[in-house]
Length: 188
Image 1 (cartoon, one colour):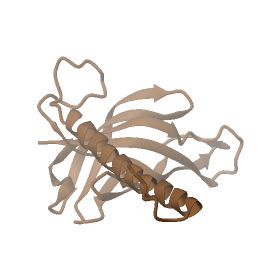
Image 2 (cartoon, one colour):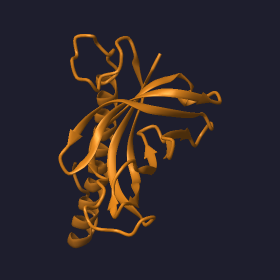
Image 3 (cartoon, helix red, strand yellow):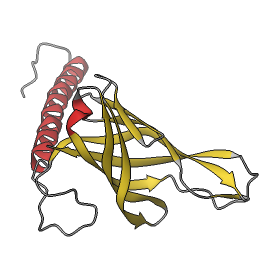
């Protein structure tokens, strides 16, 4: 890029640098969009019977959507002086297409754009040191028509945090522990 020489020297440098930054921002934005497009395209593969992980959904399903936890907690209730047992999730999930899903107890997932709702139950898990386990869940109920109406399985992957505290507690006491994960929704 050539900078014009009609401005005083300092002003010319500032104009040249800022103009170059605008161009750089455009290039970075285009590169980021390309990476997202390639990434989404790369993961639209069919689930294969050759994949042996217990967290893989049944063969023949396609990815319906991939979401990350924007904000999320796992809430535990104290029983017998310990935070043990099942947790109750509360999370806002986001994807690259500006879709949002509310994840809450049940466990349930509800599309904020069309109201479609699913509940699911774990069918396989894989422990993660220092984090809640990765899961494969099978959808048990559907409500409403929309984005989630064709989902049959959900993977919770790349978990971070969310583990119940090991400290003593008073029965009935609740604690919410932040967590993060990726949710992959599979369907027909």
